[in-house]
Image (cartoon, rainbow, N blue to C red):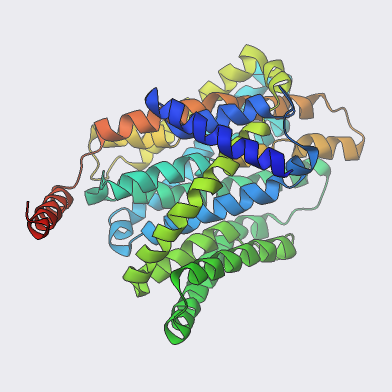
Length: 419
């Protein structure tokens, strides 16, 4: 396993450098590297490394969501609160319903099977979107209107929404008795519970850090450790109390930012260094989950269904932004930012197939759902990442105040240096 980790680090750094030289996002190179080295192409990765890949991907995702929390300022979020709530559910509903209706026409699926596929595909990928939005926040692109902040927060809730609906549909398919009132109430409940617990832990950690004043490195380790425990709590509560652990992780970072801004920026800087390793593991291991033969089985019909879903999703984004202060270019950017799929599809794409196998039913539909889910990663993750990186500098304006502050800082440093 150690050799596989070393190989992914070295080749990941090389892929990142090469793709940036080619004016592509580095994460595209790492995703494609993972596909190439994964078990379905060259099979260079050790089996024990792949066995722990889900845990490694989860820890990497926690790192980037913590950084997202440390960048979610209340002031920026207040500007786009309404649009954030709308974008957390309407685009996903548009995509899921469209695939539910068109699935039987494109593929040999029933409407219920198409609905399960629709809400597997309806989740945007935080692994792809969040790092790019953090980059734009750092660059102050779209910061005046809070656009990256809106997409960060909405993408996190979007996943909760899609996974919850998928779980309900899976219950219907497997014949479980589903309490619809509890299922519907579970979505806002899981969000509120996650935000409340994350906020409470953020306050507690702030006070502990102030009292014992550990070094920033130890603070980061504590925050990461608490975040991993939150994920474990979600696993323990699964099926009884709805709880969105990854949203709680973001809320934790958000509260630390609001309570102690200097501390939050210090922790974010430390996490930024950890992210260099975490990003390589995350994107290469997501790529390694992509089963090329299975994706090819989906064919043009599967690709056509994915494109129809993306068109409906984009229409949903534009619908959410009708009365927003965003101009036409900024709205177009928001639709692009909501295209990539990767983490959720890799995590739950095979669940219908497993369920059908356990129930002793024909698994043809499960294989089709898995194939389309894999194809969606292969099609949207690299393309979406490139489009976001291309569109951000062209469609989002840099906050003029930030530009002036940066110029003043440069002049001040030059004066100190005697230039």
